[in-house]
Image (cartoon, rainbow, N blue to C red; front, side, top):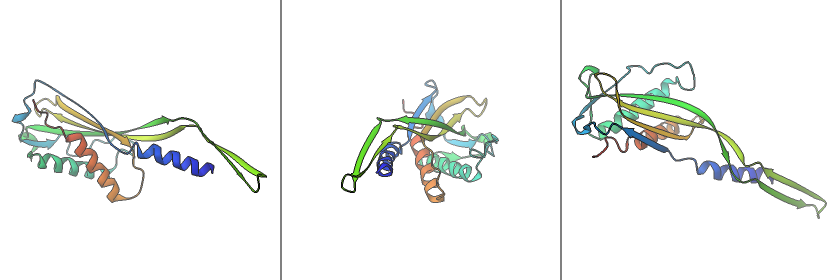
Length: 181
């Protein structure tokens, strides 16, 4: 019973955490309507020394997703020297705690001769993945727009699911880019 109770609580906990939480900020003095072309700030993603972050497969997934979303919005890829804006991204992971009410369960069996008590402390630990996408001025590298997406990190081994999660995260982050006046 304890396992069933813990599974039910865990399932409810993580199903509520499956969406992307997005925050955005931008330079309100910038005229985003002049932007037509983009390029990557870094031809190759800078290495951090963290093997979880320095992942060539996810790098390609993120770059493809960003390019797909920007192209769908009418922006065109360009050489770095000719681009109206540069794109950079950063990934990080944070350990988080989720607290919920303490849950107790009682069970009896065998004609009342056997019984048990189960409980869940109400605290679970999980890893949150954060994807930050920056839009930068090509001349001086000044940030003009930033979007951050946070969600429970996917730790599975299904490449299609990893790609789908990244595509959705990038789409949610860039949903309101460029900002409308």
